[in-house]
Image 1: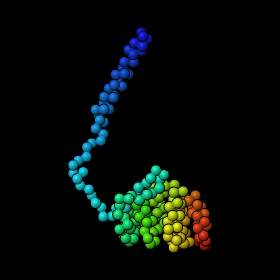
Image 2 (image 1 turned 90 degrees about the horizontal axis):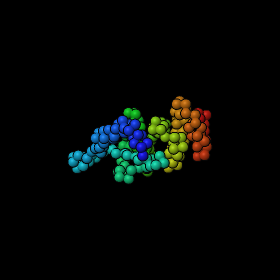
Image 3 (image 1 turned 180 degrees about the vertical axis):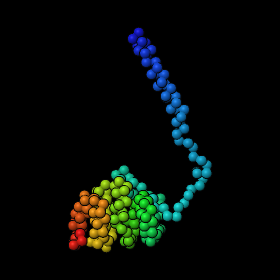
Length: 182
């Protein structure tokens, strides 16, 4: 017992500093989650063009079920897509992409812009390929050699040879025959 008492006396400074740190932590960070103001609870801001996309655990984009994206026209979504890309708002580009995939008619979209936005958002190659395949299967008239050549050319300028190879393999599996430009 005497040895324990001697040990506690030897480390009393360390124990004091530890207790002081705990007290300082609780006094500074005790109210980490402040209460919501009454004005924020009573008012909700409604945005005219709200194209929110959520991401599930596996990283796939899933549309938020609370949004009214179906009511937007193809032209509105395409304009929002183009303005978001020009202003380097890649999150909004991906939101528009999610909305475009659910349209009934094929939108006029530059796949190179979509892929660039996904890459800037740190999406991996398998995810990008899945997104492209699902889009091209949903809208087979967009699955032409010219569209995919534009995409391959854009990726070639950015020196992304891995994704270029995978897209060329995807072209062959989708029965798209490469031309001289490819």
